Image (cartoon, helix red, strand yellow):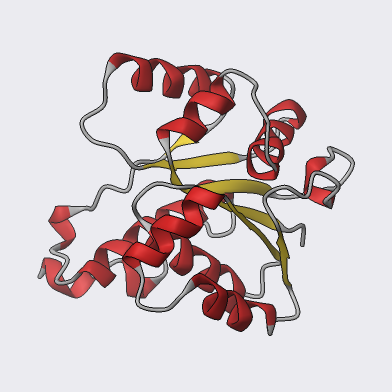
Amino acid sequence: MKPVIVGISGASGSVLARSTVDELLRRNVPTVAVISNGGRLVWEDEMDTPFNETLSVWQEHPKFTFHTINNMRASIASGTYPTAGMVVVPCSMNSVASMANGLSGNLLLRAADVCLKEGRKLVLVPRETPLHSIHLENMLTLSRMGAVVLPPETAFYLKPRSVDDIVDFVVGRVLVALGVDEGLPERMQYRERLN
């Protein structure tokens, strides 16, 4: 199985990033992670566990790889390194703007650019509200280039009871968009709540 790249940028929603990596590793999907400097700052503000502690746990998994943001010699910076695609979760508007305009000044942006140029899956989980016209135009540009724009919206008809339910649903949608899963796992469907 080809690895999935998880880019963590400096937008609110670090719990989505942690849960995405956790779920990929739970499924034994080879996972390569990269986090921006802004992503680290937001993580420290939002999460109870510091990023480096979480990283240490991930690094115990044999199918996990981590690259620092400025390591432009990393494998994921080249189109010759085969991947199943990439998700940027959460995805800041700065990252969206950079990707939409072909700017790749760090490894996260370069890996996303590689996915676009190689025609690989690129899933973006944008975190911003409200959105102004430049945000929308940049996301439209990326969508036209083949990226999947997947805002972290919950399905209220599933009657989520907690933030964890909402996170599970969004992560499930990410896995479907990446082609890692053909449908949402039963624990993410909350079917019993529809009765």
